[in-house]
Length: 497
Image (cartoon, rainbow, N blue to C red; front, side):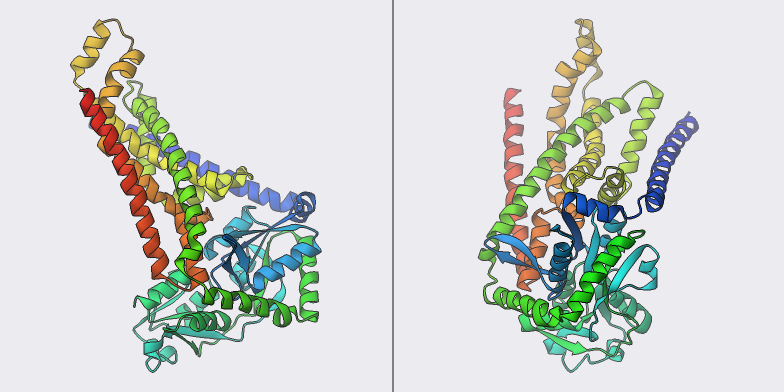
């Protein structure tokens, strides 16, 4: 009997894996077909919608970063100015999508953005998946960003022997550390501000970044020092990344870059403009100034939590009833879903829904994808809570209800579920609180919830710990308030007894 059950579970899991594999194959096939038949589709879309969507990782001052202007987030920097000129030449409105650096090319390939302008170097690996424009900016070299107290300790790559060195995940700097600093351990993080935080907290001995970025952080943080490294560079400079098969768009971007170079706009306009914003932020970078950022983050966090809870409760109830069903195929489908969702990381599920499902549904926004992914994940856990609650009700309750003439559906609705809900309320409450905190994971796809806004504040203020501390306090207030509300309803349930 046990062997039969095990085989049934394995067959059901195999069926789900086959469906997922088929789904991913269809995505890949659709992607391949688009490359063949959708020649020049991106430029046509830009001209039709009059909108240019540019992806960037806005934590790289002075190339791309954020500033607070009248309580609103404004993207500024050299790359943003270039994006504005490209949009102007294309007669389009510029829309900036801010996300992790290592997610940019995936977003480009899946059509979430039209191009990437984020200090990206056209190395051979990247050229296999996307096309690049002409080089618009050539960095003068790589620098070590170190703590000022270590000024006499770390001067070149040999000094970092046995130490951990930080670099942005997916960047040229990460590859340079891996290839040329073999006696050091590389620590990769998606955001520069997190690397700087790791540096200040002693998690890494130094961070490898471009000269402009290193000097920007050193100028705005008196505890940091920028030191020129002796890393041998093979990079050619920064270029605009564009999806394969968009030759017309590449030519249009190159035309703008030629004009920018001819007029020397980077040195005469872009860099001075970025320096102005950096100076302004340094003069008034108190947390009070960024209160609108936190308010916006709180709003998005609450919205994500509410809708995810609704999806999770509805789906969890259905899955629980499916798992308790006497129909074997329905029961094993529920078991397979619950085990699969609980056995895979939630962040992977969020990325899959946004980039995978979102590839087939082009208008799937980041916040909707995040809500769906978190709700689907929550449904698996809620299902187990509800199932355990139903199993905790004595069988005599069901028998009594059925003997009184109630149907099975009414028995569950009026007798079993209300009692089960009372028994599992503490467990459900913990799940709701967990959902509120897990909403921070959707920041990886660019949803403006609390953690995303905190990262923007870290970039703008060059402060790593203080914005995180404020975010922790806000999360505590939210979870404490939610727990008080849940406790109130729990007491009312006991009072009804």
